[in-house]
Length: 260
Image (cartoon, rainbow, N blue to C red; front, side):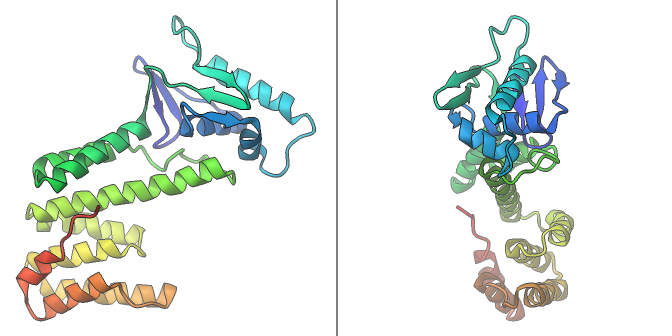
């Protein structure tokens, strides 16, 4: 069985996808999956589901939701749901089941290791395989003020963007300058505060013999950062702009660094 949380929460079993409709039960399952193989206390789960406004009989309500999750996760012949009571709360053990976010981390780590060893094609495949696990925003439309879900969604989005950055760095190192221009323009339109994408786009345009366009990207980044944050571009962007202005191809290539 495969648990999926890099997108709307889904459970895939023998090619059949199932999901929960009730939002509070979804929240419970999300918290347990994020903390898979760890004990999540009753107090933590209450904070995730009800925040600062729990009902009068909160423990009884939580018990009902736990029973619903157990029923949902139990499959014929599986021997149980994997959700067990562990003082001071509950633990969802994965066992032989898989969780997409852990597979994402494994594939991203493999891609990073290939990149550090200079195996660019393998690195590109690794990052692509990791990003291919995403089906939308982590946890889909489910959001919460609880620290488990809120912390996970922030971390997951940052991890996704880092994987994108590493994939683009890999493709720049492979000389695929023109191929990354379109995707980078799209990323900048979606995430205008991410300075790394501006740097990568400037370098790609410069190496594709589009020096003027590369300098216009710098000016766009500078205007956006000044307007939104009141700051100047980071040192890496300023260094790359200087390298482009003086036409130092070698220096601009040296600015393509593999993020750690």
